[in-house]
Image (cartoon, rainbow, N blue to C red; front, side, top):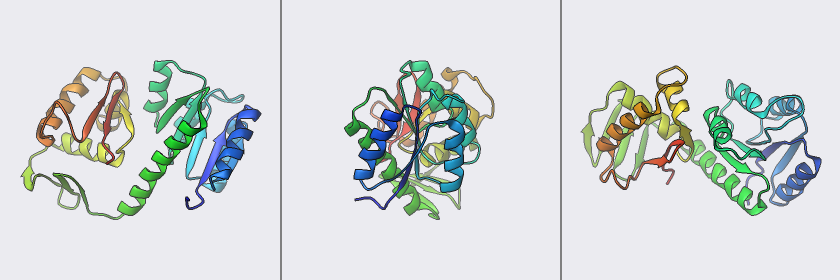
Length: 230
């Protein structure tokens, strides 16, 4: 049982849209549907849904462009549901802030499982809102004092390392692409992913007990990194 979260489905295929509406309504979600990007943006602005399911092949606008606009003012989780299955297209969508990507045709059970993952992240974020500290196993971050502790011992992080750690924690459970990390931390596009890998290796050495089996900073091969959400 969920707490009547609202899911906005932006999908131009009426059969898929209707199927999602029926299936998710049975799971006690409040479902809104839009067939175009313009209608989707209107419903998003007027209803502020908790989760968005977004198709990329919309008739009036590319879904990636819509995602990019949404990310200028909202962190609402967006799951891409698209027939586009190329790796570069998945990376592009994740780069622009998508939380997950599922390729059509899909099994409803898998989609619902991914929605539950997003819900758990939302619940944690809501519970942690206002927290001044983050703790997970041997890692503790004191936001107010800007201090990081490993097994109770304070460690030194450079300002960039600290900023990166906060970015990862704020998005824990979500895959962050190399380009997204570069844009958020260094503020420019198209940086060298090799530099990010070296940077992450240094951060791991300071945080992890076993860098060959990291507890916190997990590698998504060919895409980027994900901070463990449990």
